[in-house]
Image (cartoon, rainbow, N blue to C red; front, side, top):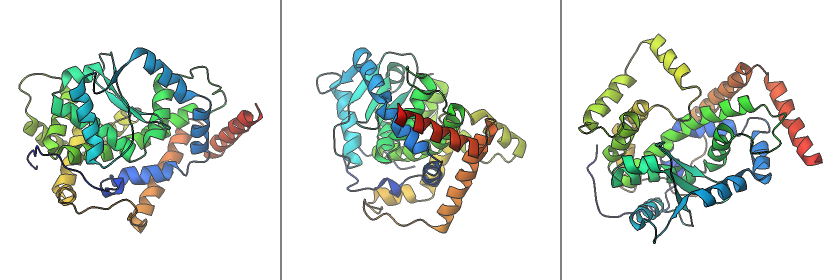
Amino acid sequence: MTGSVASPYRLTGISPKAYEHPADRAATAALRKVPYLETVIRKLFDLGLERAYRQRLLGNGIEISPHQLPQLWSAHRACFDTLDISGDYPLYLLQTPEVNAMAFGAHQPMIILQSGLVTLLEPDELKAVIAHEVGHIHSQHVLYTTVMMLLLSLGSMGLPLAGLPLTAIRLALLEWSRAAELSCDRAAALVMRDPRVYCCALMKLAGGGVPGLNVDAFIQQAMSYDSWDDSLDRGLRFFDEITTTHPNAVQRVSELTRWIQSGEYDRIIRGDYVRRGQEPGASAEFERAVDHYSDRFSSLIQETGIGVKQFTRSMADWLRGQTAS
């Protein structure tokens, strides 16, 4: 992997399509084809889903700024600058023992760091995690990540959700989320220009801050995990992940390492990448991948005990009810 470079740099005009994982691109395209899903999600925002959580955050979190943890704020801004993203994106710190971060908000995205994460990671590792969240904003994931987070952890918040096939919606969003995370891991590596830093962060997410952890050994473990050829064990991994928002940390390091070994990472660092407005059209391979995820989403809907037709009917009926109310 490439060594660390301290000087600042900017990937001018970079399109997220330059580095997005093929599974993310295909899953996102397939998710948009799920009948009524995007319309329902946007309606939930119209009903105040995002505003309610934002107010909760303003009352209980710490807003990071040039006057509040300025080094953390500077790292936050540097991530946006590197990916050539303009605009104002707030950064908040929440007191919680959990080790996590999130990009939240479809209308005005923000990044939220949990204090357990901030105390666990070294400054450069924390910046790498922030860069991962900036990747979600760059790829416009936040519409889906926000509603998924709210439906998973906050319940209905008094919103009229009766009649929606919530289990099917959650499973579809979780399947998409695991693919989307792989793109943002790449964004973190590009921002840091040292993928090992981000691998260190993932190692600590897996094992905590135990002194003496060896990132090279962890990367080797990840490559061994990827080459495991027992089909039964691979099937067990699938069932272990089906209700999670993220692939496991070892798999993420494996995916990131294989991408770097492909040469794509170094090519982008050299300045050879797709710019905004120059994105290529969809290939036949991409369309096949979209079909795969479309079939997968249909299977997930079936597994909740309802058919695709019933799912579509329930979504349409709920939307009609909201229009009439």
